[in-house]
Image 1 (cartoon, rainbow, N blue to C red):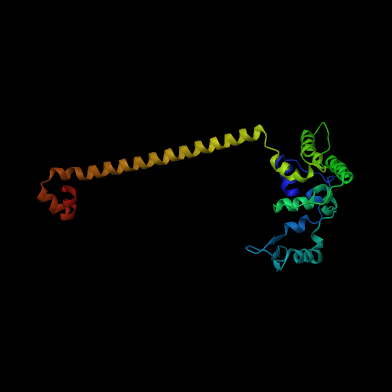
Image 2 (cartoon, rainbow, N blue to C red):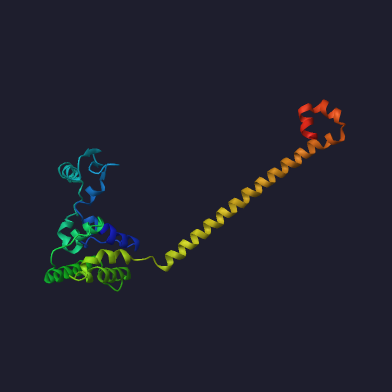
Length: 241
């Protein structure tokens, strides 16, 4: 959920989550382990530890291997277990959303959702402090508050991820102007290269034609029989055919 809906937005806005933010990458105690494991290509079950290059028959076993053999790889400041924030991150709902499952959830406790909404806003305050000196933090706080935390109600929580996917923060005008400038520069560069290479090819053909013309001009002054004797029957046939 964080990769898809939080980090994607903060990275796009070039905003680095500080150490005060509990969901920052550097605070996640399992982030380093997650970066160093991968699913074996063309396999549904097998996983590989990139630390030891060992293959395990499931993700569960590679996780146990990480805990036993590579606990020292966890940085000292990584002290947050993200599972503690599953109420705010809506882990179960996101799991169903990612698998495109039409899963129904039990009845909703409105008091619990109010507590979740409050915890969500507290998390935003830690991750995106509303300071007048940091416009990005204010803008991101408002964005996540509107499209995520405010949706933590029994009526709206079911569609929160569909809403988030439709309201990802878009790049600013400066981004599109830079992109247009780069594309224009590339187009101009390749147009110049194409024109230069085409001109060089035509010039080479003209030089070859002129050289050939100079070499064969005197042949026209010779009688046909003499041309055959001097240049050979094959060349003369090609010349006069």
